[in-house]
Length: 125
Image (cartoon, rainbow, N blue to C red):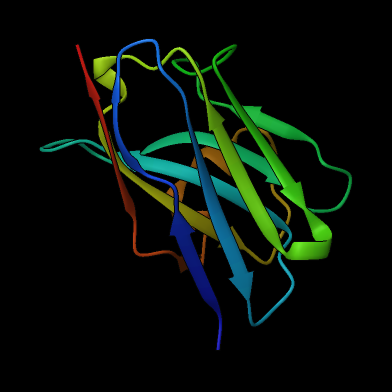
């Protein structure tokens, strides 16, 4: 059984930092990604990483502020979020794909078969 378990969300002031973690069990992934969903909005692609090779991809709104990484020994992917803004407030979801996709397709939530339960990130102004 595949499980993705997120942790690390919370409340932080603007310009602060948080680190999200996603522990994976049950199968080997090709791509791990983070999406977020603010109230009344669609899921937005935040960041993605190829498990083999470590290539990374970012949404335009988080480039230069967020960093995705993975620890293969721990089967865990991280999202380091710096310089947080109130507009970053959302539920953040970890997602896993068993296939590799291009830099364009990696941003589509339809490419991911498995999802975590989500963790709330709230940034106050």
